[in-house]
Image 1 (cartoon, rainbow, N blue to C red):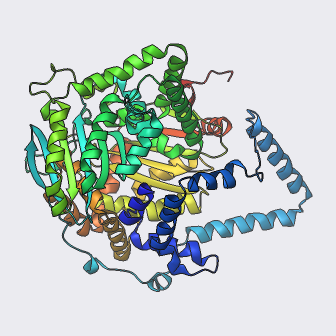
Image 2: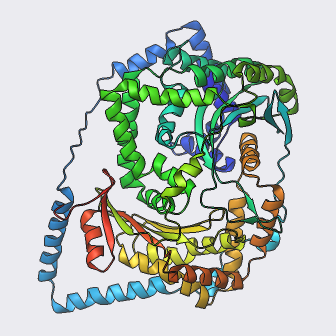
Image 3: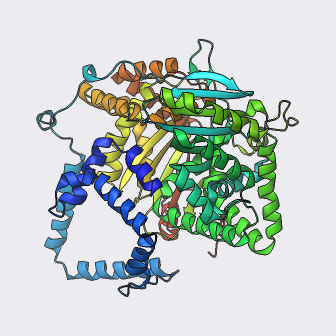
Length: 629
């Protein structure tokens, strides 16, 4: 109940705008002809539940028993895999189409051809200026010219960095305890997801089993979790502006996140320490279960989100942050999960030893490796000082630290294919659609990426790619991303019936930007869309997280303002320059962009037959398919 009440009072809508969240709340009642305002209210309901629990400790258990355990209205649905299903469906469809065609007269066939031609022409014809003018829109003059300021106070606490952000949080404290783990052994990287899940309470601790731990978290806090992340520190040119970093530029950190009311800060920091340093690493049954869940989740997401895996795989060849992402969340990670599962089932002590290595590394952290991040209102920040101080002292951070070890970046950089043509590949998954990725390097180390590039990519996503890949090509979606820190780009499509055609349309984007007549109204529309991405609504806790990220990377408000100024000043000539850069990247024979397409075996083989020189790879082994396969 405490957790539910905390969530309702905090009303953290994450990336969803609060107005939309109110709308969803209203519709949950309004759709059923009930009072829409009731969807915003919770005080009476919450008070009634609290009263019922107080009067009857078995109240919630009885509801579970009656509504779930003793409920006889249930169904069991079993789905069984069929490795030949795709071939059966294609064969059935081909036979049906052949039968339909044979039943049609010559005139009917000509009508189908004409309907198709007419549809294609209509799809390729832009809306008239008169039609576009009927849509209400903002102008550049309506946009804020200044980037939003996030106040931050930087100091130290027992040798660790201390960041404080004074925000209107209604008495809630948001806290992060962060450790730099850039010296971790590369072979331990794939275990970080498992370790952080364990440190989030999945197995309990030496003091509490996982049920008791969950009760303690819910009773005293609004939630505690452990995670990890990588980031690219800012590299600066001679004029102080941000430029493309070296391919091996990366930092790796482990985070403990939590939120609570001010009066519970001691309990929360105690749980931080307990979960990070004494979570159970010996719960074999639970760890095997978690690895099975990860394996199943990856298998499912290959099929439903192949576009993300394709762009991740493209980046893995170009820079270390991309390689880390592939090792910990891509096709390569899937093979690691399978290996970890096998190890857990057959030699658990060895897997436990690897998890202990990560904990031992964390336990040897230096003061210089640690950061405390606090976000709260002024009164709350003042009231939690002693508890935070006691927490840092209790960790026992080392002054001298451990002996220097090679960074992950140094160890992994040898795997990059810098300055080389990366082989095109098709990754085979059980699906009837494709996810087509295409990308490479567009800016070299030391070159500056202007804010106008964000406007151009927005324009391509909502205009050219929308028309060519989605409307005319039949895909569910398409996009382009540009990594300004690393200078790399990637096109991708979502649930795409094509492969070769989409690649050709990606390549034609350069000529389109160079030659097309792009109205000033379209440039302005793209600018407005880009600024909306810059000015997305943030909760008080979100602002503290943004400031923390900027602290670690060295990105400051001056950098953000320069980027914003360049976005607002974008012209058609910036579109042309982007097109010329993209064309130069396509023409660079030494490190030309490469293809990574996820799709069915038959679809990818058809693309190969049509001229794409792709190596077919099995997503579940991360190895090339043999000829006979």
